[in-house]
Length: 377
Image (tube, rainbow, N blue to C red; front, side, top):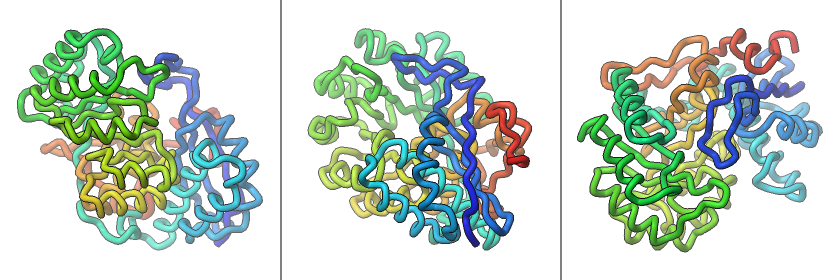
């Protein structure tokens, strides 16, 4: 089997807000779908956390390297793409694009063998996993209303992030967290994401430590990205003194970037994003590295239905991955799958056991948000 071409299509029109200082608009493109075509008529789908103009440029650079390659050998082909493009800049748009290609090749391997990707990764530790509803922070009252509504839909775990948290004052931060905890009750999982990768993050180590103690008092399950993502030494210090687990890693790419964070003990919970980090192949190598150090691996999942499907397969194959992120209110997740995501009575998501990623795309929705009819390209 050989790769004949790769088609990219950016998602836009209803891009959800990200909580960024330079806030996203509905017409902005931050996620791009890929279709990897083969000479045997099997197509694999991937998702890239990047603007489609960047992805299309990367594909032109990568085309001589992937054309004619065997997509059943995802790890080898991905390493080929990485190794031959080091001089063009590791970790940026090329790595993000390679991530989507890798995901799509695993999808092809699963479809060819009739197996779900999780089993091909070595075996399924679980056939369902708990999703946590991920939503932006608002003022306490409207945030509480949204959390109650999500709980009524069946979610038992929640992450609130970005917004005004850490950007105004400590009193407001605690009011937000208190309102969230009171809305969902004492037994639901609650996580807090400061979003310190935002442009010109205003807080420092002492704020993060003080806030960690406040979060501990409200039973927060983890404190995510409390410091800028280049501040390794302060992450190490914070993890040593925080009463709650510290998580991060969503902006890191390639396993080599994660290695010092894992080796030096900067994180309790490692959060690679398979649509950025190098795909499923790279994610699982990071997962093994983290597990060898006794760390949990929870995927960052602010992406698409294809990204969610990949995260579910990874959750089935990684021993410590007992939660996956589910971005609420995004049509790029809720509408792109031909079968709606549904929670069972215990608030769990079934991990598909169909071949490949186990997802069938709603091509009408794909066309609506990309302007591309993929059956015709």
